[in-house]
Amino acid sequence: MISCIGFDADDTLWQNETFFRLTEARFIALLGGDPGLTERLHEAEKRNLGHYGFGVKGFMLSMIETAIEATEGQVKASVIAEILAEGREMLRHPIHLLPDVEEVVRALAQDHRVIVITKGDLLDQERKLAQSGLGDLFHGVEIVSDKTPETYARAFARHGAGADHAMMVGNSLKSDVIPALQAGAWGVHIPHELTWSYERADPPTDAPRFRVIQRLAELPDVVNATLTHNR
Amino acid sequence: MISCIGFDADDTLWQNETFFRLTEARFIALLGGDPGLTERLHEAEKRNLGHYGFGVKGFMLSMIETAIEATEGQVKASVIAEILAEGREMLRHPIHLLPDVEEVVRALAQDHRVIVITKGDLLDQERKLAQSGLGDLFHGVEIVSDKTPETYARAFARHGAGADHAMMVGNSLKSDVIPALQAGAWGVHIPHELTWSYERADPPTDAPRFRVIQRLAELPDVVNATLTHNR
Figure 1 (tube, rainbow over the protein chains, first blue to last red):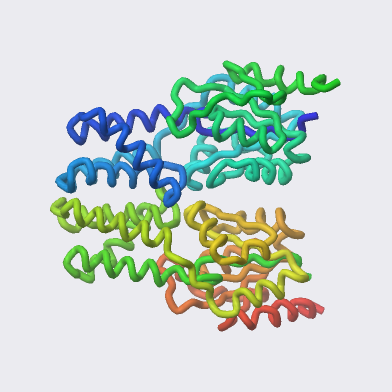
Figure 2: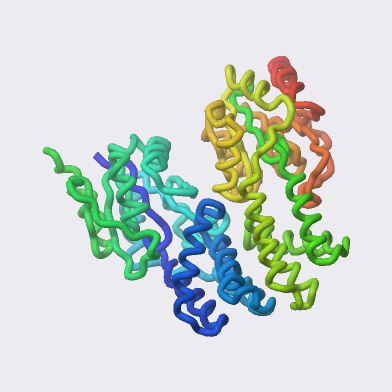
């Protein structure tokens, strides 16, 4: 029944938000420690999404903008240089795979087309996939500017038999699960302990193809159970 | 013989480098007018390509880095804020189609799969394509982190009958023509009056599938001529 399984990447296959949080903490320390800066930075990020899209480069630009605004133009160039250095550090940080990822992807790849569908900066996402060592397991990789129902319809048409025969797995209800369900696919939520406020959403109701798992190791059973669904 | 025609986007379908040059000129004026800054900025861009990839966001970050380094850390935050504003202006600048683009793409789309293969920031390239009004004419859009022979082999396998039956058209010998020829496709160079130093390369020699045109309106004849090639 399921021909194609899509995986989100950041915080589904490997850690991501934790590095953003660490960088945020350093950013706040650099600017004197006012915890209210977190909120200002998040507002700048959201305000700039329409210009910058998702990813580390836009985050760097939003940190610089917030540093200038929060200091009313008094921030020193040396602090901006530190922000640039922190961002570049994120862009070369080794990835940390989440538990069970390799085993589960390898097992599911035997009988399904497994693909990655991820937002973010093109080069950075490609780098992380290459570093993960999982690249050869995936039938396709879609790095997209946003995750809408159309994104999933297109990706699952391209790599499988359409959304109706596909499943999307990820840590963001807002980006991974709800739009995939709206496209007609199965949507499996695997919560991560850290989720960026932008990605939060209420769980869907009245969605028979919605599932929640606590560990990725539960996923093969969820996939198998779809075989008897609706019989 | 040709099933798929790939078009580069920036400076092939629409103006791009001219906006980078205008922003560079404003950047240099902001920092006091030293023309040597152009070279420093280009060096920073090239040095950062491995981190940032291509596109406006990386250009913004390289301008900020150059401003800090060239002033030995003395640049004022208000100047950095101006650089951010200039970059955001680039990201919302209306596109200007180059001559003949709509007519030629529309004509070739009748008998071929026409696709876009472009580097740059995902969201920005999607925005420009949407603004161009040409989106519906293209069978596919590939926004890629770099243009290698493998990039073309993959894109032409995905959208056509492989590189052997494909043609790539663009203003960059280095990115559009030479790697496409290496993949086995036809490579058509349409020079643009402004070309970023990074994109310069010597024309290929001993390449029977290499063509040069001066106006895009010449392209349909080049495509038709391939029908009798090798007979």
